[in-house]
Structure formats: C-alpha cells, structure tokens
Image (tube, rainbow, N blue to C red; front, side, top):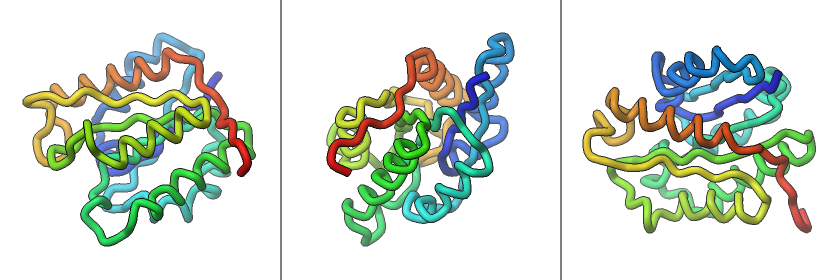
Amino acid sequence: MQQVLVLGFSVTAENPGYIEKVQAILQENAGVALRKIGLGGRQPFHLRHLLEEIVEDFAPDHVVAEFATPAFRQFSRLPVDHKETVNSLLHLCAARGIALSFLDLPRADVDAETDWVYEMHAQACSMAGLIYRKAPEGEGLLRDVVHPAPEGVDVYAESLLELLEQKPAVPVLNGG
C-alpha cells in the first residue's frame, strides 16, 4: 500500500477538511493510505528543521507539500529563505527515494498569476521532474483569507485527487 503524507499548515490541519474528504473517497481504493501533518500557526521555514523527524516517523512513499497557504510572504524573510526550505525537502526526498509533489492552495491576499511562491514551487517541480498542481480559485471558496469554505473543501479535495491520480516521482536533482 502506498503511504501518502500531505505535509502542510493550518488549511491541511482542519478536521474535517479536504484531507478527510479525500480519505473517505480513497477508502474504496486499498492501494493508497493518506495521512496528514498540518502545522497550524507555523511557517515553511519552521518546517525545514522538522523534515527528517517527520520522514522518520511517518515513513511515506510520497509526500505532497502544501506550502503556499502560510502568511510568510508578509514577513521580512527573503524568497531565498523559502527556496532553502523547498531545497531541503527536495534533497531529503531524493536521498531517501521518496516521491514528492506540490499542491498549492490559494490565499485571498495573493495573486496566483504573479506570486513568487507559486512560481518557485512550479519551477522546482519542473526542474526535478515532479507533479505540480495549483488548486483553482473562485468566489465563495474561502471563508477568510486562507481557510476554505465548504465549497472550497470540495475543490481542494478534487485537486488533491487529481494530483494523486498521476504517477508520483522521486526528485531528480542535477548538481546538488
């Protein structure tokens, strides 16, 4: 059975949320076990210090990174800091033979067409041969700046299911 870990923040932590919706759908498919870690109130730069322990504890075959929802864009940290987090995850998964993909979910205060975070994730996936999925935005999907309304939960679940239908890949890194 493929062990899939969705690694994210408060949106992923919600219960019931989009993960539980997907878990209910996947119950019929005994080939996938979906688990989650949602670190509410934390930022991606906090997570990079926990990655090895998380991988040790959960032993996933595939990690789905949900890193676009935290508020870190508003902090004084530079994009290079987030790139360090992304690279830490890429290198850890590559070294351990763990498939990796990115699922970017929207924030109301971010323009998905010009956002540097979405661009960084898409570019990292393109360069490492990974699946990248950006959930659609739309009126009525969010109940606040970032957390989904019931309709948003449905849309996010569908986006995750579409991602999981694709064959995940272990990151291929060129030159470290």
